[in-house]
Length: 95
Image (tube, rainbow, N blue to C red; front, side, top):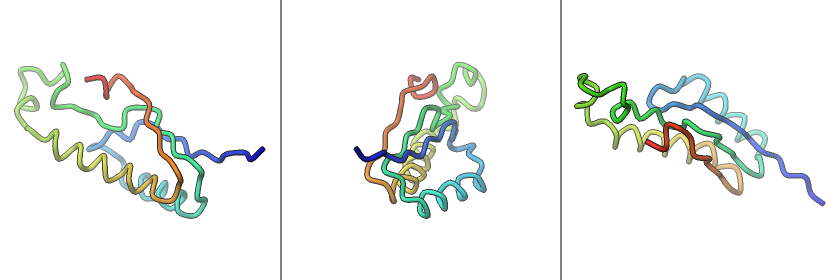
């Protein structure tokens, strides 16, 4: 039986990600060539549709598409050197 090697990450919170941390995780993924990547939630912040943004300027920023594209690119980059990528639902992605 082959043991699978996983890269497990959480709370990317795009577009508020910590870029140096993401850069280092990408380097790790490239160097280690994990079998799978597991994102255990909160890959996006979704602040513009948050209840905390209601009746504030954030509710009108209309950045959800750009935020989603940024998150998608980060996830593609992290999973580029593995065979599969899994994302678990979270309170932010349920928005």
